[in-house]
Image (cartoon, rainbow, N blue to C red):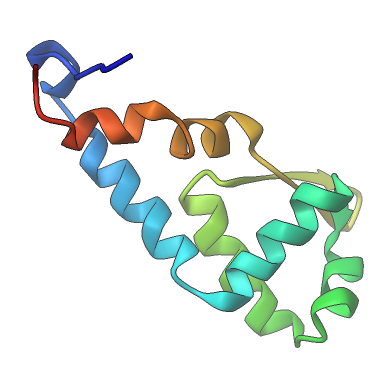
Length: 107
């Protein structure tokens, strides 16, 4: 089934900015590894991510911030620790036909 987005869906803030941010966040091997871990492990404490990634906290924080800004992951603070998980809805949208519809010619 072929779909295209209507003019209304492209008016106002375009989805291009969102996709740009998401693809930039995914354009790094370390961030892809982090996302893979979160998708497979579910919710993970930042201390465990640091160990799993064998990465200093400062570098890990940088990568997590980019993934958070792109809304590909979520964070929940509990006491002094942050717990991260993948954002299923954003990943589903990114991997869905919605993105394809932006570039599929109208029939």
